[in-house]
Image (cartoon, rainbow, N blue to C red; front, top):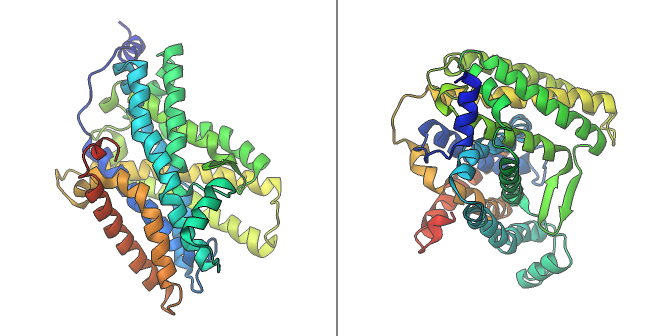
Length: 392
């Protein structure tokens, strides 16, 4: 049987459940902490400036995090999707996804999100009680989803992947072959990421701009990025479909050995993104809308950075040889719950710190540490409720 036929056979067959991958578990948990950091510092930036104090260092953090972490979450979420679809009957897969993603989204949309945005409403001088604010949110709107938009979009992607699998289990083979070549040539996989995401993202950014969201009640997603996220998700699906440990994500491959090279590759487009931000602010005068040529250049740098930092982060976690348990390992089981519950914790801490004249670094450090501790503790407590561990 040919090598490509072997790939197809492995992708088509119903595989056994895989054991946990320590490197990928650590990567997911690390990204969860990046999300918490992002929301802890954004009030103290030029972008989110909802507090009297700010610090340019947090702008550097937020430009980086906003440019990659959700795309990388979708990539990691896709890795075990194809094998899960192959292993389960469609009704079982649907039930599991609704339980793991649909139920938490509904609960969060009615509880976590209104509680979070009530802190913002009070900060803006609202005199509504929480009950009145909650009722206005779910009946009149706006009904923002906060960071849990990721959950419903991932559910939609999972269901789409299930349909695609029923059409043909071989759809993932071309990308899977490039993943295998990535064992020795990670730059080929990087090039795939860049080309595909540039094709789906740059035209959408030019057409929609960077600030438009599709919104229907609590269902929202950034218009210019929906295809970008699906591209990362489907590439992740393809990488994980077969020969998982002999491709780009192999700990014995070239990627972890060239980790510092990928750091340098990452810094180049990131530095150029800041050049473009300077051009927008100080030369163009923050035009709205931004010129198409500007969007095209910035969007291209965005996808270059996003693809590069994904490989750089994966390279470092694949290189780690320590069996643990370290802090990320201890936090791993609670990471998903922390993602779901952290937002109101972060916003209410920021609300409590608003009137203090402390430096932005101090406020953000307090906010981040408390958000991590309280969201971790709350999740651990919730997971002790009978049946909750199947959802959180």
